[in-house]
Image (cartoon, rainbow, N blue to C red; front, side):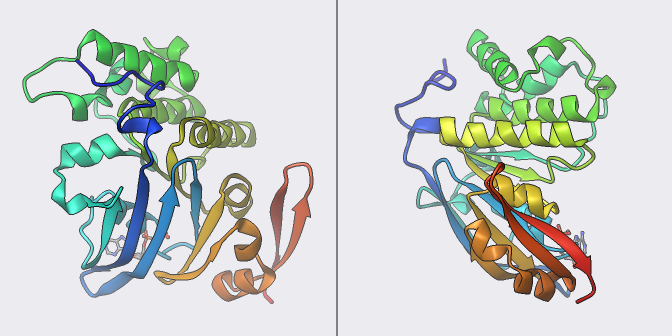
Length: 277
Ligand code: ADP
């Protein structure tokens, strides 16, 4: 039996509790390459943090350090004050759902099977999914609009459909924290908006904490409550989008001039790169 029902948990943990994520002083090397230096932030229930920065600035490495796929040389990740190094993989997966860049499947699993895999961290070693798990998977598919795809093989879906299925799988884990690595890569603009609207809605309505890596400054600025701009593995600036998306910041970090404006219809900052400063 599962301890709480999907999307209605106002008790204990899950999307009802006052959980927060604290990332402190993360430093990580790939052999001699320093990929991250002293990176940290805090995230509260319902917040979306956008991680931006040029290629190679450490965005993906940071996500991997947060869910301990990579173990940092220094630094800690605390979920509600608890160090995730004290948790085993399964427990980490009950707190943190990951939507990786272009996940590949070795077998043409059905969409339903893929989403149900999200329940694995909640299963005992020798147990099968219960009707409760199936209900949770179904609910995750409803929320992401993938229920009608349930019987389809995952490898036959379009990029946008597949991305929604991967998000459904992550939601079936019932995490408090969702890490997304370039979730709109390879998607056309209507699907980009659809995915990011969904993510923002989950954060606002369900209290999910979201860390969103994006190379798209305009989308990141539009859908994040706060941004963290990385330059060569270090935090260059962090704060509300208007504080981070500045002409000086873009010039310093990306080496290009840019015109920044505020769009009142999307209520967000828009960056137009102008070329070499
Ligand atoms: P981003 O996601 O911002 O493009 P990454 O986190 O992928 O940046 O990379 C940060 C730095 O670490 C870069 O200098 C990159 O070349 C290096 N790096 C990333 N992955 C590896 C790896 N597997 N082995 C060695 N160096 C790596």
